[in-house]
Length: 276
Length: 320
Image 1 (cartoon, one colour):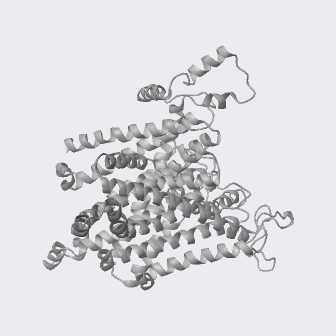
Image 2 (cartoon, rainbow over the protein chains, first blue to last red):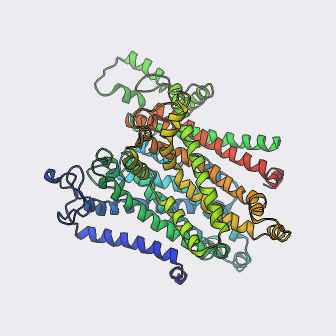
Image 3 (cartoon, rainbow over the protein chains, first blue to last red):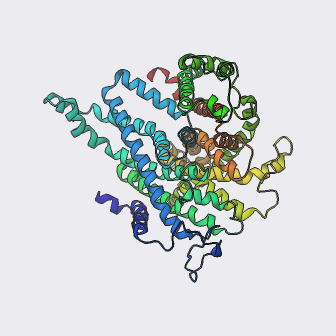
């Protein structure tokens, strides 16, 4: 854990993420303006300190900074839940597959192959089309995309650890399967799962914002970064700030998770550490 | 090689069958049948008419039977009829396909043209500042939401005449130059993320190869550095990059869905969105099937290219 703090890339990534967490906590108690309150007298105001609309207002006169701050919570909630869903189900399937082997392994991995045959955004859109537009369904749609990815990684990790001496030693000293699984296998496959989670979180934010941008994610008037960009399309030629800042908010958070994931991978893989 | 191709083609069959099962049964999960949706709440039909409609909509038999019949029709190129327009689904999809395909290929070309030279430069010129810069740029490229980049391009370049396609799309075979000009920014918006990935892989792979003994030998026997890099190192270093590029081509195809919407390009992505907004499930079914099949075929093609370049892959058939 202390090695994270020696890796500048991971530190910057973690810093960015914590910044967003702080913004989300603050937004629960205080926002510069009411993010849903329309104010037709102040439509499409450019960013200015004088009016208090630091990042300007949108086509309904709503404060963009307040909407970005409120959208942060929704985006992060969806991304974290979706990744958690994919990671838990996928890892469970992967461990099952790798640990038990045999017919189960075959079936689970073939199922993963089939899910891999869909480009992730298309699969998410398809699932959304079937479930209908609702915030909970976005979590489900992105989570499904992740299940096969985590299943493969967990299975690979289990296979590489399974035949080690210490696992066999544990079995021969009388441990049963579930004991070995929890005490020996899980701790040894956690690292690749954590790295994948960080990278998946970054993609989840992008997927969520793309879905909302296409009108299939978080529904207006509730702000999400994606639907802010979507409604900005009508006015962005007149008021570029309506499009610039929500996108910047997405990019910096995604960058945070990418930096953290990249740094963690460095720390984990000594081979890459030397290559730089 | 022929045996390898055959083996890989055979392995596609279960995957594609699985895809068709998933697409068919997921659409069945939608509450309310296609028929009910078609009729709406206003239309009254007599029992006899209902029977006839049920037959037409294929709701008169158990689901597994319907699946087999549906699959049979698919294999004959019959993808069914749109629930909204009543037109055949497949010709409409095929008409939109070339644009999305062109966009994907151009995006791939962009990402290779940007990613490979930058990756090589990063590996050859060992300089700590440049290293960090390349790494950060790479991660930034990965973190850019494509549709945001596309929106920014529209804002920034809408003044440039002919570059931003806004409802005045011309097909490639009609006016190649104009077409390429208006595809430039959309392709760039889709490709930039993959360019970042390719740059990173190219750099890492190049660094690894440059440490090999045979590179040192080549340098020791007095070859120019340029020759060593291009003739000896690049040839081996580019292998993993090809795989990465190939496997990501499918994701470019997915990216095209959003980018077509931003630039108002009449491709398959926009058709898919239209189908979803209209709840035209037979059209959605058709598009998802076609895209997934293309995705699988592109991955196969990547494997084959890789096997052609690297004989170890195709000769190692038994090991797997």
